Image (cartoon, rainbow, N blue to C red; front, side):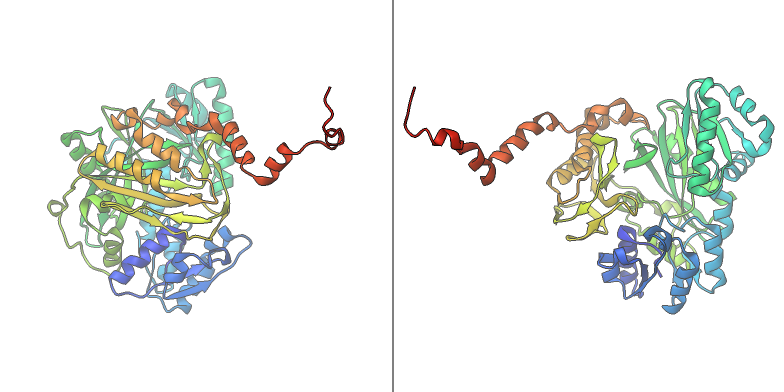
Length: 482
C-alpha cells in the first residue's frame, strides 16, 4: 500500500514493479486521473473534509490497506510519513511499515529530543536554548546566546514557524509568532532558539540502517539553494567539502544513526559555516531529493527500504558504495518567483519533457490535469547526472529551457537562471543566496511585457478591425476635404 500521491507514489510503484510486487494506492477524488492512480494495481478512494485531510486520515488509510490485503505500507514523504503514531498503528495492524521504527521517529522527529540525544552522544550541536529545560528562563537564556538568533518550533519542518532575530528588541515578538505557527501547523507550540550562522551551507547525509545494527551512508547532498527555508535545488557531491571534511561529516551522520539504532532510510542534516558543521535535525523518511544520491551511487533506495522492512540485512558494506560524477535536482513548482513565489493554478494544456542522456524526471502530473492549491506546489523533479558539476548545471539549465508546460505558471525559467548564474556555477552558495540575488527571481523579459501584450492584441482580428474602422461621423463626410 502506498499512502501518498503524485510523483513519489509513482516512483514507488515503478520500483515495486521492478521487484515483481503488486501495488495498491489510496487516493482522493481530485487525484483520480493522475498517473500514480492509473498505474497502481489496486486503487482505493478515500475522502475527507478536504483533499489534504483525506491523506492525513490514518484510520481510513490503514482500513484501506486491510481491504487491499497489503502486507506492507510505504508512506513516501510528507503527510503521515513522520508520524510515530501512524507507524505504530500500521505495525499493530499486522502490516510492515516501510520506514523507521516508531521509536526512531519519536526520538528524532522531535527536534528538542533529537538535539539532546545527539549532544549527549558527543556529536556537535550549535549553541541553543531549549524552552522545555526551564520555561521561566527561556527568553533570558536565549538572549544570553547573543545575536543573531534563529527561533524554531520544536516539532517544525519545511521552514514553517522559523524566525531570524537580529535585534533583541524583536525577540519577544519572534517567539510569539513562532509559537502561533507551531500550534497552527504542528499542534505543538514548544520552541527552541539557537545561534544563527550567517551565510551557512545546508549539508545532509543519506544513511541507511537495517534491523541488525548495520548502518552505512551514501555520501552527502548540498541543499543550500532555498527560498523561505525550503529547498529548490539539491546536488551531490557538495562543492564545499574537501575529501577529509566529507569523511568527517559522513562518519558523524553514521554515528548518530547507529547510536539511535536507526532502521531504514533517513537523512542527517547539518549546518556548515565553512569551517565547522553542526547537527540540525534528522528526517526519518525518504527525502524529496533522494534521486541525486541514486544517480551517483546506482542504488535504488526504495528497493533497499523494502528489503529492510522485509527483515533482510544490508547486502553491502560501506566500501561497496561509490559515488561517480555529479547530480543536480531542480524542483519544478507551480509558483511565480517574481511575485514572491506565490502558488499558481490552472489546467495543464500542454506537457512535454525533453529527453537526453543522464536525465531523470520524476513527475506525477499529466496533460489535462488541473493544478490546485490543495497540496504542495511541486509538480516534478528534474534530475541530471553528468561527469562534472558545471556540466550537470548547464545541462539542467538546457532541459528547463526546453521543457514545455502550458496552462499553469511554473518556476522553470527561474530555475534555469539560477543554474546559469556565475555565483552558482562557482559553488559560492549558501542558504541566503537567493535573498542576496533577488534579480534572479525576476524574468529578464518582464520589462518587455507591455510591448509583447500590445503586439499580441494587434494580432487579434477584432482589435485590428476596431483600430482600422472609420468613426461614423467621419464616414458621413464622404470625400469632402477642408
